Image (cartoon, rainbow, N blue to C red; front, side, top):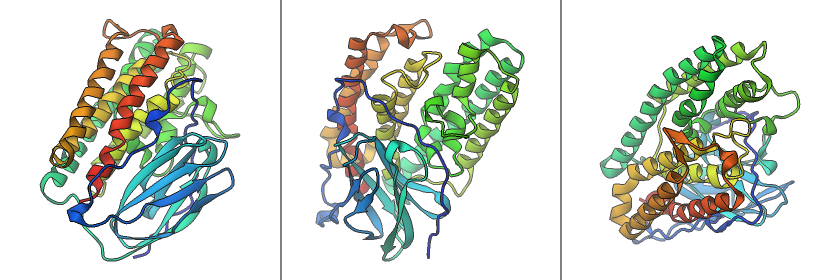
Length: 388
């Protein structure tokens, strides 16, 4: 079959790095064994710059395909693989200039896909066709792989089950002009979303930007909706004449996400689950550690905690496969998660966390190093899982 994705109009988040922060965890490692003793196909290298997205090859056979993306430009970039209907088959974000990142994607159907580099992490990106040949293959249909996919889908469903009523309560407080209550509900409501954000990013029609776009990432003329628009209304400008309408749109958008993940047609494979675990950590280390995520409310540490919890659950879903193939890596990942959890607990305050503007630069650097160390281990999990 031929997959013919339409051009996507969307905005991805920009990335900002604090000076002096460690970037050791940004380069993924692939220490996975070859499947059943066979050599794995050579990775496809991607040279991403401001003006180009040059792949070393534009064809592959069905199954796992590895892309190694090198940012040779001067802007932070990201790389996507799209399937039919603009479905995101795989993505890697927050690739800083001069760095390489690895992405493994399961392309199970023959046909024409699209690749995209997004310099500056905005706009439609620099697109090209990518052809997959061979017979259709089935993955995650039995044994530990099916259990991993089923387990993670149940987790995602549980999070959207909680997200919808939490968002409704948050919006009700806004519409009742109860600013104090809305402020209290803002970080706890976002927790359910932040645990599964890579899933939202996989849906077309700009669902993630509608829910979670930051003001700094707006393009000229773009309408700003979602959590962060309401965050600014609550903490900076005061409720606006259209705040109720924006709040109603947020409820509609999280309901769309909930319906999407519950649809029988929505699937997620173990390779994507492992990639999502990495993506959640990248969310912290590349675009949140500086405090730019919740810039008005300074509730960033709630997001940190949720991202770590979501990553940990994703790894736990594929853990039986990981333990079978590389038990030592699993133990190292466990230790790094424990280190990060211990560090985050230092910033507890009651049922939540201290305001992030009270966290000093040296303390932020300590958090960054711990997240990077964890990311360095989790970055290896996808390679171990992908090659069945």
